[in-house]
Length: 335
Image (cartoon, rainbow, N blue to C red; front, side):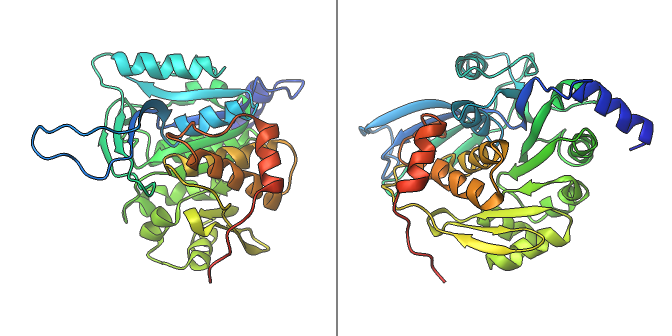
């Protein structure tokens, strides 16, 4: 990016007094989740079965993270796309109800809002049926950057389910975010082996990469979390935090690499646990904590979400989450 353009972003985004209007901007995948539990099997033919809970939630690698950032007390801005249907009404109303700035959310005519049906198994697994929609039409231009980058943190989430934004537009935004002095975080969903090549140009502009071990393994072709983290550090990521569900997480920086255990909880639904982990990481860093403390707080966020149904379950506020971080039992680390 030319030096004059760097100065333009810094002047436009940060302002004379270096005051930003939001703590975190979350860019990318916003979807409606329709969840039911417990579902042992889909009934045959047209038969009926009864379950305990059905919920609608705002989810997605940007949407779920946005809701939890707001619940943790961060001034939060949503940047994504929904359609012009009843699902969009729910998504926008819910985001606004959490105090999230939705002024940069695009509402696209003639397009369906992205949505997922999740049948939550008794053990917390979550087979999903996804309808791609408005998120595939979402993109940004440089003219949008002033709003997007008016924030301390910029999170991008949703590749490879953002057809028009994946690739060069993602890299351009993250590069501009770094030029504007933002801290960047990145996560994805349902990665394929082809995702690595598409994402590679953006990785040097990612301060905190937070993939699940499933996505990271597919992308790297490796199975061991330490090898996976080294793979992404070598591609330019500053810090890599690999989430591993009940096996905890692995945190890798340029200087150190260590494991953190999961909390010992009663799991109801694992939907959105990774998004909650990212929200907790951002909140911890926002409070000036180091990466280990922030990751421990992130672990507590993921655990809380797993105790309820949907990506917005469990988390009440920052103080209650910090209390859990300090008092909850942890599971033993596996080898």
